[in-house]
Image 1: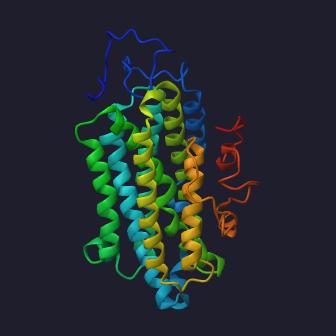
Image 2: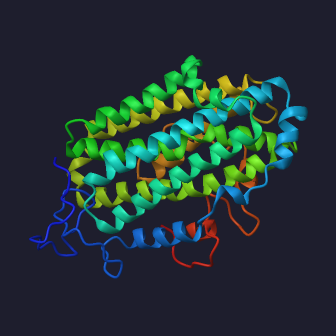
Image 3: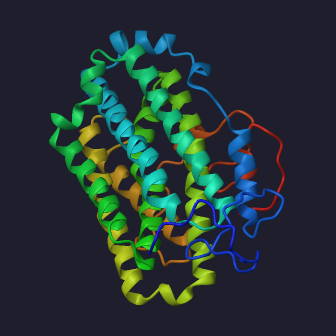
Length: 340
């Protein structure tokens, strides 16, 4: 498949002809006419959720880091930032270079462009946290050069993106959507929960607030790719063969094993409320939730083992948690519309 043209004045594509990929777009972004109305709603949520790293006060976190964290907690904290920095760095480039050039629905292009900005904003937040709190900022940013487990995880994720980006086919685009769903809905969560575990013990509360902002963004990113997958299933059901589904399940299994290994590695079974057994069950629960959201059967059928995480991921004005609530609850504004 070829990348779409930036401007295509000879296109006579109608609104009904529009496709997530494989369409023939004019190249003009018109927010008053869209086939995928969920994308317009999601744009409004993302816009209303705008935030900046300077909004978070990390003053007390500096004290906690230097005086109140145990050695295992400090090690975990440093590794968490190193891994999150990697994920958002990958995604900022991946969206612009590997995904958006092949998406032919302009309203979806807009959401992907907004997501790329938000990923860069997350990178800015990590820089603020690492510079203000950690002992060695340079080490945080170069941790994969010294830590084999982090390097293994980074290598696998980046290699998947590279493989799907080369010689692009329709199947590869579909698999890339799932790869992005996995990144947004799985690879961040051991890190997020590790910081919430510290906050549950009354430590690093500013860091937990920063993670709340970031996780709220990641939920909209997850919804974006899940809607892209679901819309493609309706448009192109013939692409979702048994062979493709088997590949998707294998991607989830491998990603789950990688995230479980990472969670156990950074916590070393020494973080209260986030033990090895809980990490494994939690990641399996998340995998099931992601599969269910795109109409696939569950792999593990396990219960949510740490519902207290939902309390830490809420904002004060939210009445429901990220997994059960209406997307309007994630917004700073007062948007009102049906579930996606």
